[in-house]
Length: 181
Image (cartoon, rainbow, N blue to C red; front, side, top):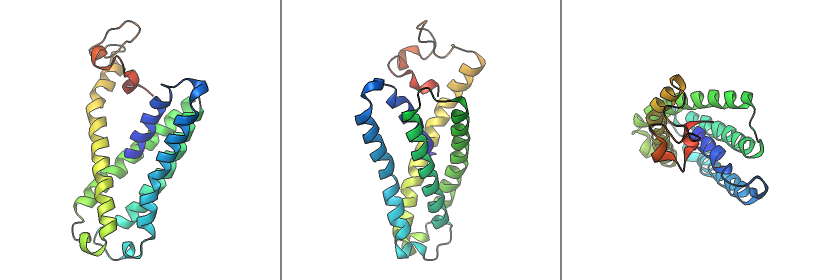
């Protein structure tokens, strides 16, 4: 789920910069996005990560690497495409649902994998870190979901920047990016 949050945040971050001056932020974001892959690959290639563990942490690490690669692809697309086609947005939201299901599974499996702390220390530590970040990401979307639903059923009741109205206008007048993609 953290992969979805990262790509979603980058979608909005890049649009704060003028179109003709996005090269620096583009390079920084791509370096940071690829940097998320480095610790996962390092743990993947460690010999002791393949040792026996009661929970499928190694398999979930592989799933996390795949989702991170997809995240890098979406991040690149969101930085390059202006405007983003509707089909890409739909596929991105399907990726978000997949990330939610995988993330919830990852959190549950990591919480049950305390016996793996001794046999696969690096894998367990990375799993705890990724599960924590995933939990924070899920928490963010759980907090935002009621506002998105209200805005869907009663348009412009939560936020209407042109009219400067809505129950959330004051708190987000400088960050209206929370409400759409």
